[in-house]
Amino acid sequence: MGATGGNGYPLAMGTLPPFEKECFRKDGSRAAVLIGAASFEEKKHQGVAFLFDLSDHKRAEAVARESEQRYHEVQTELAHANRASTMGQLAASIAHEVKQPIAAIAWNASGAIRWLGARPPNRREALQSLEKIRNDAMRAGAIIDRIRDFIRKEPPHEDSVDIKRAVSEVIELTRGEAAKHGVSVQALFAEDLPLIRGDRVQLQQVVLNLIINAIEAMSTTREGPRDLRIDTVADASKGIVVAVSDSGPGLPAQGLERLFNPFYSTKASGLGMGLSICRSIIEAHGGSLSAKPNAPRGAVFQFTVADHPKPAS
Ligand code: ADP
Image (cartoon, rainbow, N blue to C red; front, top):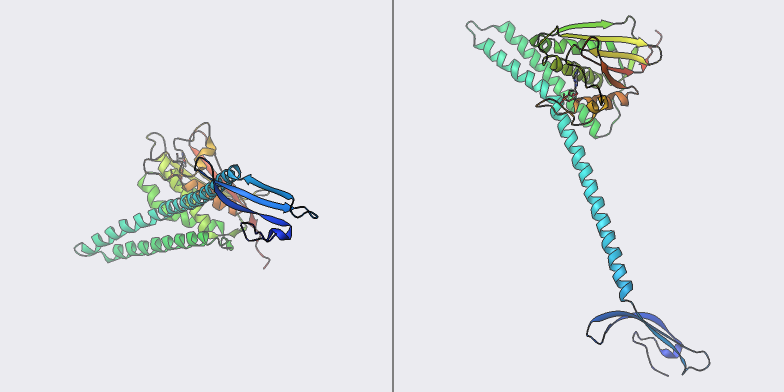
């Protein structure tokens, strides 16, 4: 036969493998078609040919391609949104945690300047202010280190934590703030508390947040004594329990869990990250953080962490 198909396949071979081609319809519009042909074995001059309009198929393919592209776009958008909200949360948490030591540094620096400028200069007070500045700067640095570890998804430090010492340090740190707001502070520790395995700085961050929240809550109340109480006890089933109780305005009757949501805050300049970060820290330590009403008024925020018995000496 010697004839060839549009794609160069000799019809003499008996078949013309299907190939796509673009044709023009009578109305001048373009159409994609699939063309194929085959001759019958014995009578090579007889055979079948087909021409299949691929327009519907092509349209469906284009729609599928488009929706696949959209799917990828949505995925990318979501990934970005996730990253943006994680970064937002992170930025908010850094701001929240570091704001306090930085404010204290500024306050004590002003104090030091005043003491040094006095006539005669009061070196002793100035030195004390500078010491406080150094401690706060180290605290801010430690917080940033922890946040960096967190970003790197490093596991929390596994220190053997003396909980009495850790809680006492935070109480000392917040004494000034409590006094400023007329809050009396009482700390009770059970005897022979076992050591905790965990991250000391993170656990102190939790206690600090709970104490500051309690002081802030009480500073909004006008009546009644402002009492802050921190109880640290050992519980046979729960491990160590730390409870921070106040005599502030108390908690909403319903929806207590809402307090632990990121960005939930009733304060004018609150970020609402404190309790949510506290909860994730405590949960990472295998414990739990909860809130309940105090009697006769106020709130109790308490957390548990598994204890870690002292090695036999
Ligand atoms: P923020 O302190 O930035 O508001 P938190 O996560 O620390 O964020 O707290 C969320 C909210 O929980 C507070 O805004 C407040 O309404 C409530 N809250 C926290 N602690 C107390 C408390 N001791 N007494 C009453 N309400 C509290």
